[in-house]
Image (cartoon, rainbow, N blue to C red; front, side, top):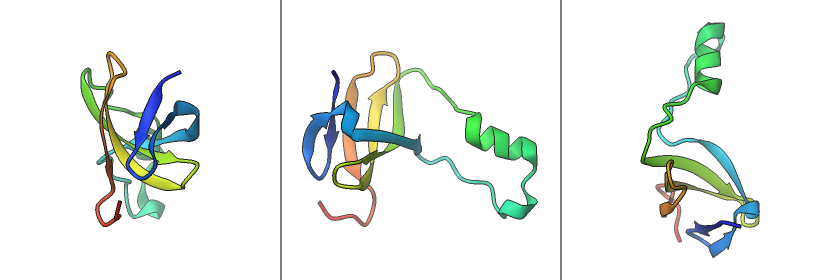
Length: 88
């Protein structure tokens, strides 16, 4: 089992985490004016780069969201940082 680093709790089993989104992906607004195609692209389209990718994750145990950088090829965790404004 892989272990992920929570910036608040330290190293934990991957089963304690849930993927949130690609970091920096902006939700289309205003919502009532967004086309079905744009919503589908936002929900299901991903950049899927090879190499380092920044992702938003939540540690289900403490409830904190954070940004984790992972290598999409090797799945190695390259780092984890609290979201701006969150104190560790």
